[in-house]
Length: 263
Image (cartoon, rainbow, N blue to C red):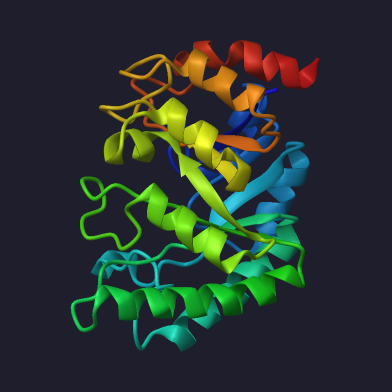
């Protein structure tokens, strides 16, 4: 079964953020995700989740100073103490919100060290963070992001991400498989889904070229959903897309999946 989560950072832009929880429930979602929770106190978010019968399924570690161009700290040399602070902060939020998955943003390619040295920092930080998260029974996710949307992002290849996960062989380090990014980076999404679903902890969806809803673009999402179901994936599928009109109007494609969750 496809289990959909509304990404409240992308969907329901016509509403204030805290009002988006009730909109997701209205439309049949039972889970939500978003980029960052840190502008709100955990208890405020928890109340909105509980009042609307929603499960928090994912959010990101703090990326550093987003307004100054930072896009994660996990691979950055000389920022390991800052990274550790973001891990502790995210774990505190996750514990309060009963969230079992956290996305660890790698950050941009450093100019001061070699790629191999930067990967060493990334691996060291993932090992440290994995041990901390394991005590909370929380999975850490790493996600390849295409460099057209996020120029100079360090982790921009699915094979690279899979190699790190398989080499470290940590029980709570998994792949965040974003179908939109996969298509932009590599193409051949069905083949890569089949290959990487065994190490995947979370899936996100949007349809290129405009990063819109699944039935508006170049990919055949009914087929991709069949691939996901046939592979036995039982995790969440996050709707991280840019609605081409109001969010509710773009959810026609999702009605049968949302109805199945409530059956």
